Amino acid sequence: MSRSLRRADLRAVGEVRRALRDLLRHWGRPDSAAVAELLTTELVTNALVHTDQGAEVTASLAACRLRVEVRDFTSRHPRPYVPTADDGTHGRGLLLVQALSDAWGVVSAHGAGKVVWFEIDGREPDGGPA
Image (cartoon, rainbow, N blue to C red; front, side, top):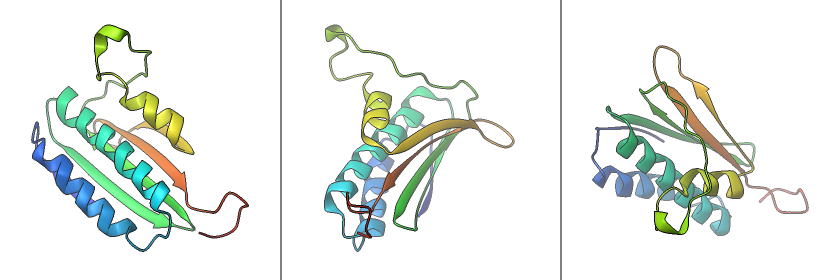
């Protein structure tokens, strides 16, 4: 799955969720798919709200592992922080990614910007295939 998103177009969040849902329909891990959808929503929203340009989203399944990458065109790397009660529901996206993914990170993109990515392991807890 690959999508290019226009700056501040929050309607794109729902479109990305639907495309990811289609990709994961036959994955056989509905619990992991729901987490992937949540984390993708958080990263896409961050890219569209906190940067001055659009973003690109890619998601791929390989060897029982889902990888989602959200590229934006701002070089400033995000940092998770502990939100306060006054923050309402804001400021929790990267904390969710950190807590719910099996791996995640931020890398500088070739050319300009950065890629925030996460991976979710689709294997059963005993290590077998999903």
